[in-house]
Length: 110
Image (cartoon, rainbow, N blue to C red; front, side, top):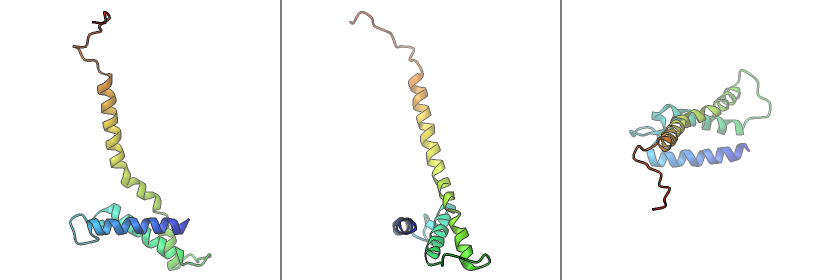
């Protein structure tokens, strides 16, 4: 499972780096906090694949394992777009529920 995650994330970061740049462009990956988190998670994933099964606490390998713990933080990057979609959905629902004052019910069928 770790290999699948690493391959998918490598492809994702590679495509982003080609499209937006890595450091020295206006929309660079490492110019935003979300990009930095992605990069740190990716570095931690690469490092942990080559670690032995048991790692002592004060070692560099342990620090790489700690980087893996920030993986769930990636979900917070999605929250602003999700909020925007939910807000637009709520506005659509509200506009659908409001009645048009010019609306009349035609029971005659004419």
